[in-house]
Image: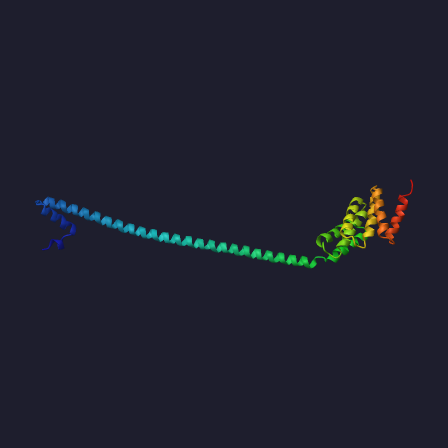
Length: 239
């Protein structure tokens, strides 16, 4: 009879060890040995069971980790989608704002008055003695259209507005600028005459006489020259 086939492997090796050591086993020793073998087998069984339980727990843990990773991935994807929606919203808003700005600009350009309209409105205000409005209109024309065909006239009327408002210092300043900038303008005699009168208003008699004499000399046979002669005859009379 082959003991290896009839006994558990552990029991076989223990008996073999006892036999080889030359010890004579009593019946009590055999019983104790068998009890120890049973205990060892139980421990081994418990270990195998615990190992199986641990494997199950590891499998559950791995499953939970996979589930958590899946949820994290799903959450991240939602954030990506939400972020893209925000970006799309911003782009759409920017595009709409840009389009609105273009439409407003185009509308303003369509309704923007022409240079002639600005000048004409300013002159109309002047004829109605709205000198401040007229002054603002002529100055607007000068700023927006410094090379416009009516810019010299606008400078002239700026001086006239100050003159008619009674602001003679600014009138003289404006007429000087006009005279220097546009010496060939047909309005030069009128500008010089109004400058001379403004100087008189400012109690600058000698300076006024110089301007009046210049008008008589350089613009003879004009109404401004005749008026200048009248002023000179009065100014030069002995007091």
